Length: 343
Image 1: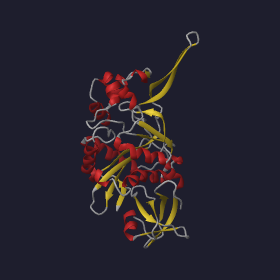
Image 2: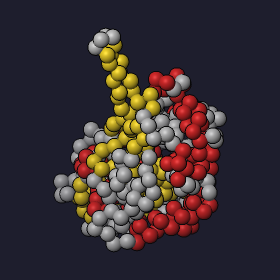
Image 3: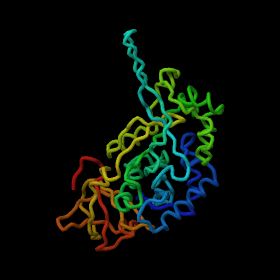
């Protein structure tokens, strides 16, 4: 059984392995011991706080294989980005150059350096080991965050974003970076990505052009990947879009990966999840559902094939109840794993 739980200090080595496996572009969790330790500590502090509103907290979760104890993946949530350091992206805009006398009317797409998402919540740090990319594990890992958002909405900003990993080739080369960023930063994409992941973002403001950039002046290879995700990120994008996230014309300043956004309350799993009382037993066969407890520090989430009875109860196997840290009569939050399903 795969269980989602908050990260602990004992997960440091496992997170380092995940960061190395993820490779270039996984900026929110670079393979750096000090940075990983800092992320873990920030998450422990976030879970320990008693809050009525978001205060720039960072929550980190891991997926654990209950049979082997292996940390198979990780995912994260930020309560409000850009509050202690600038949050940059490009907004795709439009400029019109027209002359009635010359009978010329040209429309040009442009890139504007933006801080528009400052203060938004964020889903981030999603990575799953390749050998575990099966049995709906990816959906569980990603959507478990929505169950946490549904349970603790007061800890997060109303609007939420997801920065998607942009396209790069097998050698980690980003066509967008080669066509634009390299001219201003004079370094490889991997190095800029590493510095950003380590929290050294001051160089962005110092070196990035402040004026609008005409997209049609970029090399064709750079233009073609604006708003395009990395091949490994395609399933994650589709999943987020099926839950209500939308691309609104914002892209990453390094690799031009798209930023998706929505309101927390409009996320399908948040909107449709419901509370049920637990009855421990043998459930009848049914559709896959996300099931989470209602705890903060002991938050747990998993996926189970189950059916809901007529008494507002959900029947859980003893093993699943133990993994979720719930007993007979306790309350759990439940939602169908896939959109379009109903209770």
